[in-house]
Picture 1 (cartoon, rainbow, N blue to C red):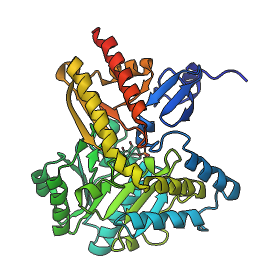
Picture 2 (picture 1 turned 90 degrees about the horizontal axis):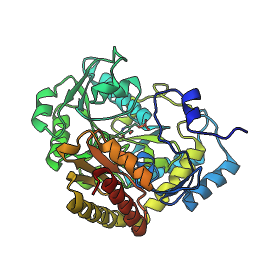
Picture 3 (picture 1 turned 60 degrees about the vertical axis):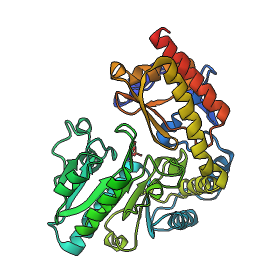
Length: 402
Ligand SMILES: Cc1ncc(COP(=O)(O)O)c(C=O)c1O
């Protein structure tokens, strides 16, 4: 067999991604190795996916055990792991009912379709408008790029679905000005992830809840990035004590195995009646078995309780780096979803820092052109936090020449 190289990507893969130079071949915990055997510390977690690191023994065990039992049936049949996982999710959250799919975009697609259908069933076709926020990201299907608040993801794909508007994030008056009897739903990320790791304020989420109630609109929280333990609670809404009608989850829910879920209350679930929606792979037994193992691990007290401690270690390390180089304007986020906004002189250069960090042996992320992002494993050992931050220090020293 011809050896696989990065150059071959451009020969045979669509150009919609531009992956880095190395090809990772193996991972364990918060470490990844490339083809040449070079080791990297992973602060990216597959963009907030590998919530328990790489090759966690409990997840490997769940996947291999289920792999020997039953892979797939279709939704013409149900299966044990799907029901067990749905039961667990309803125990852990506000939700009464669950719809499974395979990605975050699909979870949001289901949430938005449910919201429209619910309004249609109860109030008629005029109540169909969806209010979203500028800077938000909800996925790459046509409906979700249309609802997302970043124009660049829509360009060239128009005409997009109608009845969607965008208001500034964390601006309750703007939401109050937009919401009306025609609003079917308001969709928010409790922490805007791709938009720059910006948490909602308490008053904003509380106000949004109240406005939705006043206008018979549903409140959807997109927790695809900030959910599943990342903030130190199972879902971010639990940090705020503001309860949505619908919640979308994916990414970390499978710890690296594709799964998405839409969670909702009994008050709205009947609107997605038999035959109105579906997905071939939704509720796949392999995905559900792995996700159950993820939730079992995360609900061990030591895991979520440690998120705050680990986040403090990251923040202390970042403060020390900033004392040396003065590149960071603000460190924000919640728990182990950390955003680092660069000073104006470094605007547009987040990518350069991520590239330099990779050279030093650290995988990390950007969130837009001006913000660095960490979304590591929630069980990353302290020693790996220190090691990764030392790599970041070396990378910045190289870039700044200090
Ligand atoms: C908040 C949010 N919603 C939805 C998505 C889309 O998820 P997926 O890429 O699994 O479709 C993402 C992905 O980054 C996200 O961060």
